[in-house]
Length: 165
Image 1 (spheres, helix red, strand yellow):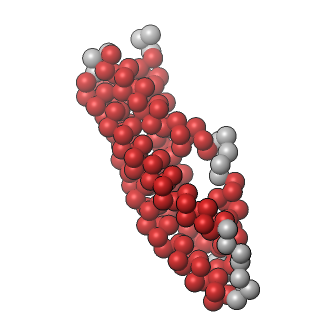
Image 2 (cartoon, rainbow, N blue to C red; image 1 turned 90 degrees about the horizontal axis):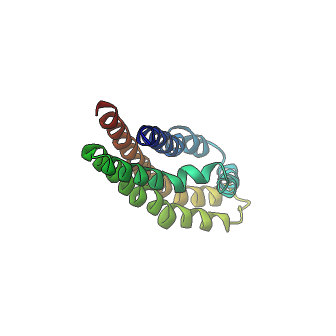
């Protein structure tokens, strides 16, 4: 039982880091690459990526991060590590609403709408579709990336508080 809290603290770091890294990669490379590509290719590639992301490798980090952070908060609270409990609990809530809920209510509907798009023959028409999708999608992705980074930071602070106790 003595190793349960430190193990969950490290697991929290791993999960929060995985989801932050996933969103961050879209910010600093994937979307810039798609924006630089032919818009027909960008639409087709994004449709394919969105169709493939719902998988058993992605799901634990996306859905499990608030659960792992929440369990770690409860364990920290039970061990009377109030600062750690507050950090992990806040991280769970921050990611739950600013990462998972935001994705489910904004990015996923945008992705589903793009999935229904037939790629037009004219490049200008494809460019209009891509720009109308890419610009708002990237704004919301940057927000969920920042929020996921905050959850990771809180998991780090919680882990430090556990280690110092």
